[in-house]
Structure formats: structure tokens, C-alpha cells
Image (cartoon, rainbow, N blue to C red):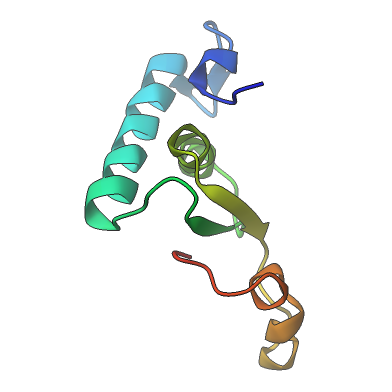
Length: 96
């Protein structure tokens, strides 16, 4: 199964945003990831989930559509626990 924006319900209203708004944000993230950050299929991206909103959702869909390896992480409790985060365990990320 390919995860892309087609799995979003056409009638969705997520946090006041329609599907078209979400798709516009997905396109924006795809441009940023590709042109500004140079991400290519297979690169590893870590998204920090501090406060989940429509921007996070759009970024996740953009990463999935570009074929990026996606890691979801939360904030480490303290600097002594950074090595135990997903980024520390699974190696360096190409973009966080």
C-alpha cells in the first residue's frame, strides 16, 4: 500500500483546514524537503512531535510521498537520555 494524500477523506475538516488546504501544505513541504534541504528517496528524516497540528500531518504525508525514511520522536527528557532516543539508536538522521 502506498501512503499518499489520496487516503485523506475529501470531506475532512482537520483543525479548521479542508483537504485542499492540507494538500497545499503537503506540496509546500515537498518543495522544502526537495529543494531547500536536498532530500532524496531513502534519506532519513526525524519529525519531532512536540505539538501535533496540521503542519506535522502535512510534513508526514510529504515525507511519505517522497519515499523518505520517517522517524517520529518526542523531546528527550534530558541531555543524558539523548542516546536512548530513536535518533540515537538508529543512527544519524539526514534531517531533523
